[in-house]
Length: 390
Image 1 (cartoon, rainbow, N blue to C red):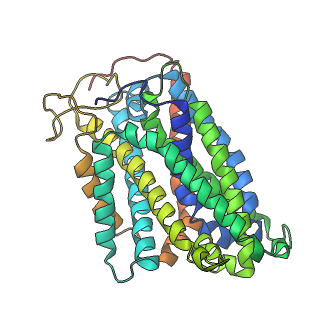
Image 2: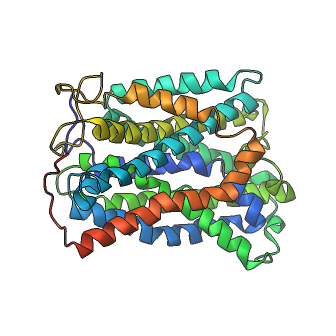
Image 3: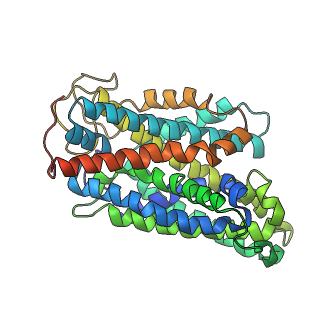
């Protein structure tokens, strides 16, 4: 089936955004390590500061309906400079896919099947992502409703079952850290995961006719911010001082559940849910990169009307054939695989990256570049789609 405009609904996009960000929310130890027992507040402040970023995405998509981010770049900046900007976005999508693939691999190796080579876990995971894309990205978007129900249900059950072990005094003292810690925590949440919804600008042209992308993206962010606040609050009042020491507070908090013999080892359910969410996120990022990568290498002298780039699997300059997936998906997955093997050497390095460099890295690509694009489009008064000669 060839997906086209109108193949996904606003509801599908809302649940997809939630599932996409939930993968990061369930491993937010790098945020708790900074703001400790006040970390749950960062979900609120991070969401507030992400609103202008999402507004920029919505404005760009509204100016250029039916176009994805890479096509918008070429319309705004022209065929040469537009490709330079597009390469920067593709590097961002590639990096996020590699980073999240590494997170998935290290979680499986450390908590589920020790002594397994991380490369094997990442390779098998990427094969699954490629398979999902080849079956049609719209099918994965449809599946997000079911994943949403499972993820929220799992979170609710775990939270209820752990209530017997909570101690509200762990929330005190309130707001005793230096202001810079709260600024750092807010920026971290804004950048990772909130601003990462930029990847969905490669999918929004598939929305049903007359459906705007801004509202679904916003609702998805609201649900994600609420989920982050609840999860962090639960972990803080369950683990107490340990919450800022362990590498995966969410996993450790669920380990407290032990009401009866059948209700032990609940962390296994958590692990399965996290793996599914990470696979979902990596698939979306891989698709965004593969679609943009294929477009960049295509010699077709026209913008693509139906969002999907279709050509033979050999790559650029070949006759077009009808396919429902970017032909360079397998090549893109190979790039993600090799990139992921070198991103980090340890979990601590990963956490340090998340707390320090990651916010600046993400905001450069997910805020600064879109803001410049919108500014240039406004100054040049580009408010309609035109064909791009490449």
